[in-house]
Length: 325
Image (tube, rainbow, N blue to C red):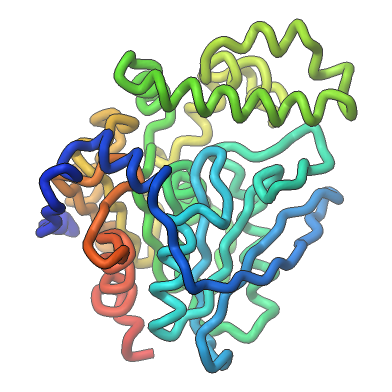
């Protein structure tokens, strides 16, 4: 049954999905949070940077792990806003920077993508060596898909992971890709493409046999990027194979911990297939909340505390039952 009703109703301007998306991504700032960086060396010799923030007393055994979206990082306001909100309520926070997203180019030809769950598994194994006995995770957009795919895969998951939240999740990557190529999403697509190509140029001197000027000139769309780089660098046949194998939609039914998907109906990045209504209706622990408003990773609310932050905390504490632990 877990289809949740929503009461989210922002001020008038923020009922426009594009306004909500742009405001939250470009103009929002979050003050009063201190992050401390840890570099995690991965099994393949590469690294990921983790940015930690802590409760005021520093004794918490609860942790929230945060995963950013495409071309984001651990300093984006949607990450620091959630970290601050949970820090103030008894949770430490570990904000993950995917490979090449921490301001430093990663070492390998491969980077990150929408289904890179092995990296997430290494992060959770690392966290399992620390003091925490309750871990919740929250992923935004691409990071939300990574998180849900990881939880749905048939692999060993640390028992300390108690609950999860995905915000603005493109559960069907192919459907989301089609939406991103529509004319009304052109400004976002152009910005994503520029950032992704800029990162490839930084790698070019280290991998000249793989990244040529000719290849870069061929990348005119986000799908071209996935066809010519993402799929080739990460062992997929082509872009379609990547979208198919990395979409969390096909494994949502396997998730066995309380998990909330919070997607806005006016999110221009998401296709109808990114709202798994039928799966949630038949699922015992997968909850779906579709707000009328919110845009893509928007969810503006008053006093600079956004709806997704308050909703996430309520979900893990009350619906997942962690307030009693």
